[in-house]
Length: 551
Image (tube, rainbow, N blue to C red; front, side, top):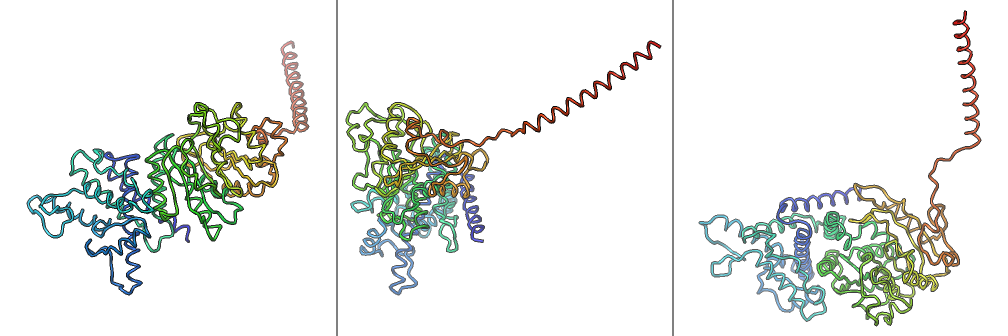
């Protein structure tokens, strides 16, 4: 019953998002569409979150009729403002709340659609001199005020630039103010129609809408989509592997966090298996500014308080931002595949404590193992790292082989999992998962061939819950299973020159048709015998014909 209710709620939510897309079709698409909807959702979430907090405070004090949204801005005391900023990290004045702005925007649209009626009643967008203030300008002012409210507070870094992807003056919204007004209002109305805070909801509606929008964009964005979005099923698998067996998780980290989906799956998994969840919070770094903003929005929409996440913008390999926060008990990551980096062009990097243990740097043209070494360096002694890798890092020679040798010799590689092909948006490559630990009980390495663990969905392959459970359980049990999993001794890996390709150690099933030679020979013998009978019969007939002709 619950599952069917969840699916129905999701379908309704997704239909609303498609409806907004249809309303804006031909004007705003792709990344821009997603950004406008997500930021509008964030604006609504922040407005409703702060309204609920203040209302709850007043209701508990005995004023059950109190409604923050009905106050004028000058009725809000400095004490309330300070309380909200301290607890929520930001502030929104009553007149700036999503619901109030939407009411006034709709009223404005009606007023100004009738040229002869002039102004009337309370009008938020009238600047007092009878001049119209358009919605795009009003929203820009509100977003600036929300960010400004967090200035010089503990939450400043979490809100600074948060609304920068919502370009209210973009010509993509329309070439004139009227068009922009119309389309911005359509976005706000669409977001307002979503059942995001329904009391009977069984889903995290804000979070689900975010993930659906990310998937919508990633599926149409080609290769670039996969760079910042990891499919939910892969995220869930990584989270299960990284959290398994841990009785307490202090901090979780993703060095290439993209939109934050991996960290949030860790949050979900930890809350299901541990009463305390992730006690020390969530940390991540993302080099792309837009995606960095999306990650912070994702954290907020999933209800992670500002003081429980620390997402930074910058190059993780060259300018890591979390030196004061490491080590981490859980590290999950899907770093970009085979990107270029400075490598040995920067002589100081070989002395970096993250890279120096291997005695060599990852190739300049392939930074994959630089991300792996960074993660390994920041992994706690009891922690687990689960990292999606390009398959080439498992078998290539040169510097990459030397890094693998370091990891294997120092007993850091716990498992290697071969995933199915075509799981990620924009690439059909069959990626793998590298599982790292510092507290292994023996020096064997588990190799899992999960290349056949999928179902086909449209143009992509997908991991089912059964697939995810089988793979994750195999990492925990470390048991040999024919054609699927094998625990390989250290010496065998050394004999194979530190090759970590799963196909080297797990035998593929023989799918060729099995032939019974004895039975086949008997059948051939029978065919030959029947053939001889036919030849004899034919010879007899020919002889009779020839005899008749002679007579």
